[in-house]
Image (cartoon, rainbow, N blue to C red):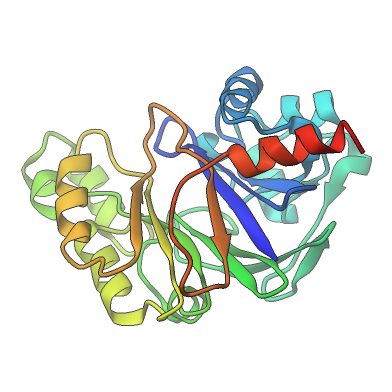
Length: 278
């Protein structure tokens, strides 16, 4: 089995990640508008009708902005904890609300989602590993520190969306108020480039094939800095920068350690075309 993954948007202006098989998928967070989500998925050859759930990490606006509209328009179930639902003030149809608990895997079609708590300044923040058979994809953003939970799940993943939010010197010397600087780097904010590369180089499993660097700060980081830092230690792992301006390509993640890493939406499109004639 394998998974197809893409970042539809990643940053403080909105976060949304697509993970699925050929037949069904889910979105982790829905922080961009319904229209923008539709537009970006269409450009990638992905169908909204394959999305069987939206899984919510926490209640901050850049993670839930488009959720209510997406859920209503496509009648998509939303998996969310009670505290996140309460603090996010989301207006969702009651029968499309599904709760989850930390460390208790749940099924979305043929996908298994394993949630675990993380350090972030939200009411009940979680990260996720999404699995199909033996393939695991992690979404680890908005994490103040690489805690034991993050490390343990990181070691299980074939691909990871990993936060590399800020360059420490840029944050320190930038124009943010001191209180905001302290919030970002205070252990319940975001992960720095240095912390992210330390997690990557120390705990990556030998079967990891892709690392999607995510949630880059517009003011305190740059794709150039992140690219140079991670490409120098990537070895055979493909490094992808998930940006705030545009979706990534679709990447095919398999459990084969000898796979040739290449972005593609073509397998999905060919499959759909073939089905028309069966």
